[in-house]
Length: 162
Image 1 (tube, helix red, strand yellow):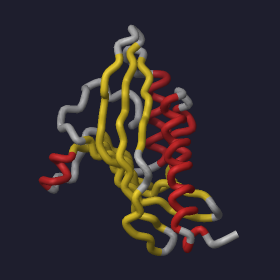
Image 2 (cartoon, rainbow, N blue to C red; image 1 turned 90 degrees about the vertical axis):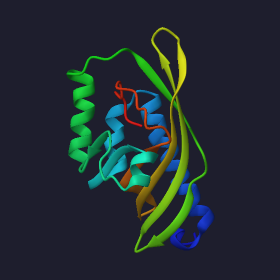
Image 3 (cartoon, rainbow, N blue to C red; image 1 turned 120 degrees about the vertical axis):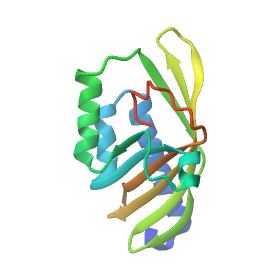
Image 4 (cartoon, rainbow, N blue to C red; image 1 turned 180 degrees about the vertical axis):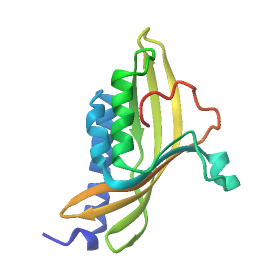
């Protein structure tokens, strides 16, 4: 088997499979699996294109460890009250920007549809994932995932992870 670090098609395949599994965990309400896609020390941020272009470091949501992501899931399950909803992620093919020392920098377009308990469907978010992904032992894990939404209008009910 070829070294995945030197086989671009295999690397894109690994990234795409990881991202698809990530989306399935959210879409199928398997939220407890979500933190497992990240390194122990990681960054997860949801922000807007406008904030990125202006150079603002903040976003709507921020976590800097897998533990914070686990706490977020726990609060969604036990503390937060929100209207029943499900997401459906549609994603483009990952585009590799660079690779250095086992860390891949990639961007992937996304569209998330939201279906409410009432059956009402809407486009919830569209944008790009800006990722730094560690590749080790044939697995990919997020060191950093910046979710850049095209719109600066983010629903106040950002209950589920993007």
